[in-house]
Length: 89
Image 1 (tube, rainbow, N blue to C red):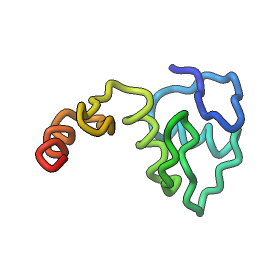
Image 2: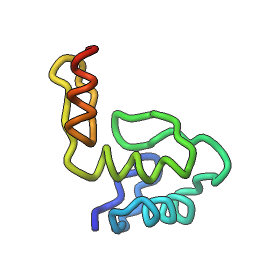
Image 3: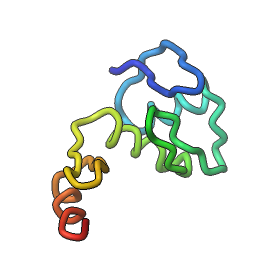
């Protein structure tokens, strides 16, 4: 369980960290539309995602251990993704 860090409307609520709970929270408390692309509102992030992917993005990038590329500062939720990225960065 983590505090919600959605920056456009801080709600002060806590959210269970799984993608379905995150999506339910965004739909109910932050007015995210279910059938449109939504920009991530976490600080420093504005990647647009469909709601079906937004929960996974938040869970993997913003709320769990992430790995940062030392060359471009992009973050990855899995080490193998970072490793693959670094070969091209």
